[in-house]
Image (tube, rainbow, N blue to C red; front, side):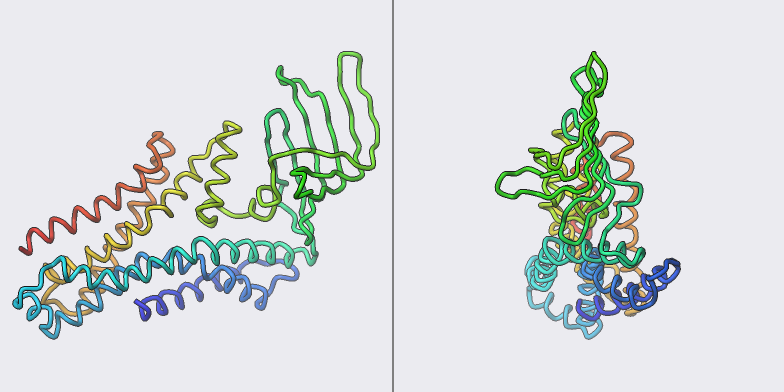
Length: 341
């Protein structure tokens, strides 16, 4: 598995670096592209681990089959269950590495990489959200232009609507800082316009306190990340916020269940690799095994990629869409085990 991981990760680094070098921005050259690729490497390794576990198991057991060692083990009465238990140990190690990467290192690396890239593009310590970032909380609609290195928001525009969807307060603040203990934001250099039945009233305030459930994590650099780049906890937080505000969270639910069910997928692919070796791929060459393994891994990935968008279009529960390819994998492994016996 380690050899397969090194080979796949090396190819992935080269392709990603070539792709990054196509971007032409002042201040973002070869050195910056290398740093960006290295920071995002944990996330790509996390995505590769299920296929690495499958191909690694396929190659390792294939070597035993080529030397007739699996035949001896089977003739000695070793069951498929015991063989799978032995093969599951390294797969479980890969599973634990995937959990650590997916929950801690990969999200941190993605946030650091996107922040570094945004700063390098404009040679500034301020991270600008392209087109701004909109946030909704009840009757509040807020646009944030940027975030500085200390985590303060820059260029905050707030629009408060009443129950009839009429605009009541329009506010612009130069900056905003988060008050952790008070769970509120302090807006600075505020221009505010109040609208009522009698007309409009404009005023300028040095500071305005804004109590909110919006944390710096919810409004910060995380908004530059796609759902698949967040941790399980980050996805759960985002889903809770979107459901509270009655927003469409289907993309985040899909990514959430993909991460939650990944351990079952890894073990299912390891079992499928074992069934291939004791079944139809027992006496073929290593090249044929690698070819079949690669095609099987691609079929699994494409099935996931197809069912994901389909679940959003046809309103299929995200858990079902993610679990279906995994169920197909386990069913194929079960049928191969029955056939080998």
